[in-house]
Image 1 (cartoon, rainbow, N blue to C red):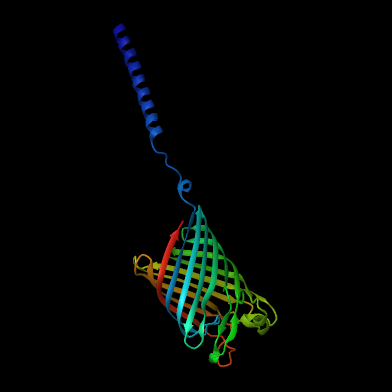
Image 2 (image 1 turned 30 degrees about the vertical axis):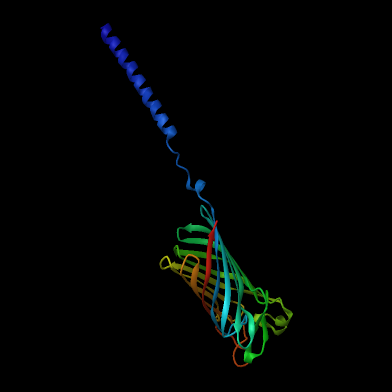
Length: 310
C-alpha cells in the first residue's frame, strides 16, 4: 500500500513538473514570436512626389482666350506635384499643376503660348470602400499677361488673376476603381476674379464692368481618370463641369485636360496634351469678338521627363 502511495505521489510530482515545464516553454515561445502590429502603426500616412517635363514640339490653338498663335513651334515645361494622405477613414488628396511655355513664329516673334497653375485639394471621409463624403477646393489662374492676335493685331486678353477661379464644393466622391474618381456636388460656390483694371472695365469673363470679381452659386462635378496601358504608354485626364444657378444654368462651363505620354527611354518621352474650355461668360470670339466658343489647345512634343517621390 505504501509502495502504491509512493508511486502515486511520484507520478503526481512528475506530472506537475512536466506541466510546469510545458507552460514555461509555451511562455518562452510566445515571448520570442514576432508581434503582429496594427497596419496603421507601420504605414507611411503621406505619399508625396511629382513629375517634371520640358518638351520641344508643335502647338495649335483655336479660340484660346489666354492668348497665343493658331500654329507654332513651342518650348513647353510642366511640373506636377502631389501629396496624398490616408489614415483610417480620412483621406486628403492635393495636386498642383504648373505649365509655362513660349512659341516662335516667323511673323510675330516669340511670345507666351501656354501658361497656367491649377491647385486642387480634396478631403474625404469614407462611407464605404467606394463612396466618400468629400470637400473640394480649386484655384486656377495663370502667371503673366496673354494676348490674342485677331487679324495680326495684338490685343491684351488675360493676366495674373485675370481671370482667376476659386471654387469651394461639398459633395460625394465615388471611386468604382482605383483609376477613376467621380466627384459630384449639388451646391458649390465659385468666384471669378479679374484683377486687372483694363479687363475689368471691359467686363471680361462675366464680371460687371468696373468690378473685379463675380460670385456664382451652382452645381459642380469633376471626373479624373488615369490609365497605364503598359510600362511605356499612359493617359491622364480630368473634366470639370459647372452650372451657374444665377445665370443661364443650362450653359454648363467645361474645363478638360488630357495628356497621353509614351516613354522612349528612362528620361525621354513623347507627350500629346489636349485642353478644352467652354465658358459662356468668355465672349471674345466670333465675327464681332462678342461670342463664346469652345477653346481648344493641342501640343505634341518630345523631351525630358523626370519623376520623383518622397
